[in-house]
Length: 467
Image (cartoon, rainbow, N blue to C red; front, side, top):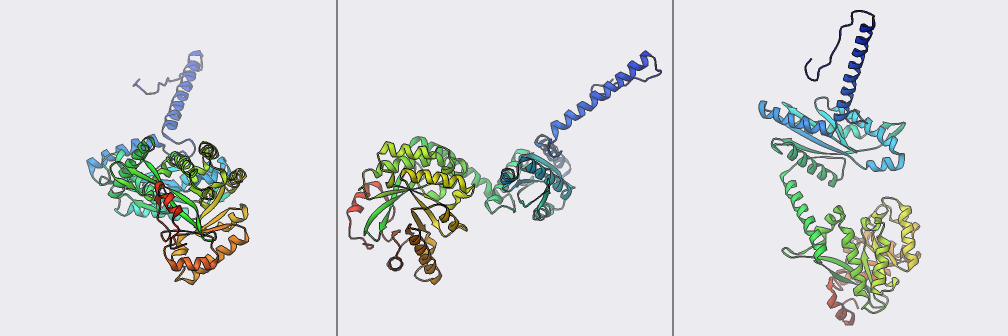
């Protein structure tokens, strides 16, 4: 018998020997079937029956070798369902599993010339190899997007879903499996950045950008340990009291080699990597520590990202910062945007009420730029509404912008909330805002962000144009 083969005994009677031979044959068949099932499970996804990551990787390696011998090309399409977590959270995991199975079957149907695999979770991949048409990857990606535009039937539910796709073509985009997969993933990341529900091809610039992001992440980790961050403060001028009423704390990164790195370059990466939690904690501690030296009527405002707000230790971080500094809670103002509500309004409102109960003020930043700000005003009594600079920039020249500002101020007044206009840069804007009854202004007209050592001078200066 060859190694790995199956022994079979010919049965020639019904005596004891014959019965033993038949029993042996049945046992042999059973062993082979179990081996086949084990092999299948090792290389296939239990839920969808599709090839799994191991099978996919081996197939990709083999396809690369075959193309190297016979010519042709290889396309790798990496797919990721958009917002699949919401399906599990709202409809339950059984429905989510049914959706994954249905999508697996749909992908197999739309890509009969490719190897469709489920890599895990809500990730799928397709391999095209050999002498396919140069436009086939694009056509296939568009077919998948078109297919997903219709609700998918899953466990009695019609579920609206979408998928983002990244595509890498070998050998141009990679001569081995690792490089092809990495570049397809980079293209997938770009597709998600570009709004989801689209496909994108890999471009060399993506690889350079990924290396740059990775280096920024490494430098950020070092900066947190070495203390390379500082705070600047932009004054908030109280038009009614005719004085500075507060300062907004703005973090700056002093890179030892690149100098000052603007927040727009590192904050998104800090949020993506979770490093914003540590940075935000330092900002909260430092802002409170410095604000204790200001006059009692001057508050400090600290921006809080959605990731910080969702952190279970967020309230404790604030309490610790207040306790260490000795700052009165009503002199601390946290600024949030409506994006903190995207994962559910209930828990957010509950935490905001806890903070308010302590005495901490809460401001809604960038008001007017989202689609549901009004509903949040009904749910929670904010202390302040910050009018986005996009309305202030054109307030003097665009009647619609002026009307929006007027409506926001009237709404805030009716709800007993303060208003701060952001991005005020000229006298004309200031005059209109005074006329509309806006309570506070913030912008270059009064002052750019300054280092903490200059705050005392600003507080003493009564010759500002806004005074």
